[in-house]
Image 1 (cartoon, rainbow, N blue to C red):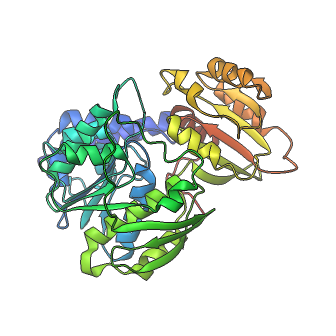
Image 2: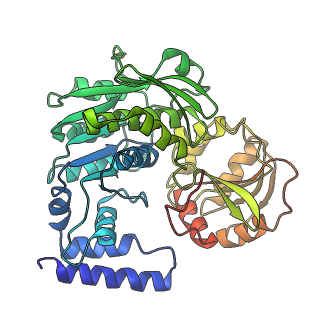
Length: 424
């Protein structure tokens, strides 16, 4: 009964917001609930029999979490997670609001949550995870994380709080230095790529420089040994080789897969079934907007989210089939669009429509690189109408490349309001 009134008010807020803005309404109800019942988060995340698993790092959190959740669910555990990718504190309150009964009880055996780096560091002061999976440190959100060392500091707090173990990326020197500078992490295991696989990446993994001496790469327990298009070969921590099909193109998704597999193996321990895990990943669709292909007006459209220099570069590098038509939308989340100029745009052939809050900066970038632009339309809704009115391309797909703010607005405008409504 302690949280009954807060839950009721939160749910009424959610209904009211969704009446005004269909497809929205995940942030404000969580914010309201967090103000009315601040202790609810720690109480809920401490209540699962098999504990809490945190997945964090600069990039790949959503895909790794979705993969790990799917594998663990396939093994029979009821998992509480945040499928909308709302990975800050109010987002977790929103997820609780979605799943709890009126008495604030959330069903589930285990919680597996993706968390923003800084929010995770704050949350682990109130509730300790069983496991923490730490993916990488990229140059990302420079208005928040001015230096990779700040990100390492926050991630170290998360790793040190894990009671049962930490799962780390062996191919990121920032992660190696994070561990070297820490004295409190226990039961560490590693995932990564072979040198041969890594050497095949045009731009590497985009990890941030450390400006420190190179540390020796540790031996990995789960390892990607071969990547070709969507095909991935992996050696599991048992030594068993497996083959699976990725839901997305690109080496960064291979990293997410081995991170998820190592996480699931640590969580499930002796109950882990390799064949079941492989089947699960083979059937798993991508996270929305991460190489997602949807039908719009009877045409197949690919949606590609870019959030920082590394994700933009890696996604451009993996445009293996040239898009027929491109909408390029950079929104309000890109506070300093100067980072766009650090990306090699050689694989971007053209843009039919440029839009978003930073449309002028994006158009200037493309013009400087002599990339043809069809039209620049400031208003995103007008731009979407113009783009989808274009005749179906003779070759390739219509492709939308957007930042997070434009992604949210685009999906809402197109009626894609369910984060789980994604097919392979």
